[in-house]
Picture 1 (cartoon, rainbow, N blue to C red):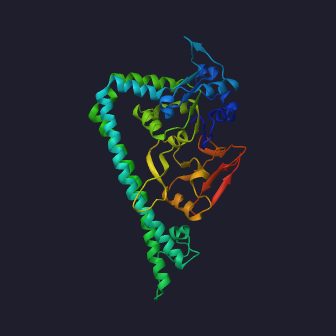
Picture 2 (picture 1 turned 90 degrees about the vertical axis):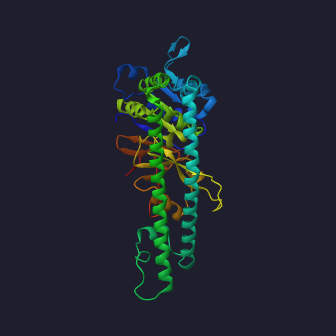
Length: 379
């Protein structure tokens, strides 16, 4: 991939994100000479909903860092908004029957998500209770030890009667089974979401609808003609379902292959992961504690990392058991926390921290938290 991606956690002012990457915006990796010379920037603000076009402050910051405007018929064609939210509104007006079917699909997904969340809340509550019971009799026990069984205490019963060892064995096996069940529940939800999408497309003929094809082509042209793309945060659900409705994942991937660089923050950073994991505040009879849950499938532009924006606000980073839980729950991916001043660069297959005021934070199965400062690569 020629294009790079810079992920930010949750910078509160979009202008500061523009200024932080200003030097990169003035250069180009794109294979199209016209795109290289124009330095065209595309703004994705669909998560702002009806405020999608309230981006004048971002355009001002882009001009400050040297992105020159190019006016055609009174509009700046060199700093452009993807206008995906408004495109979706146009489709709903033109094709009300298909739009109603899509909204019914969304309703089904939301109802299924509630069941998924309730089941996960039950499992997480049981996991925490089992760990608390284990630590009541063995205060030095950690989730990392139970999952990795470094002491061989938790997966092998004692040879002769030993009440504490026997209890530790049963609780350890229960904890591992519960984490496995949480992972399987995530996998089942991913499969269901994929199947619902495919059945909807096949059943409605959406991809052959003239209005859908026309709007999708317009959006893809804007993506593929940009040298740089900013994907900002806002309402995660709206951002995701709007871009997913027009199946724009492949266009973003192709743009990056051609050399387009992407800059993301908050929900925009989550969107590019293989899975979108959110901090859910789900009311349940099993407890009020908030937990990380699968929201939906992401665009898979980064596969081996699981990003957690708002890191210090939403993760108990001083709790080793909590960090080990994240690492085991979202296995096969490196769990990375990002803050307001955290910047993570994905360049080819390598990743490194590039922030000057804060680092990025990696959580490992041992329950450790490692900070990577500017210039340091993440293995």
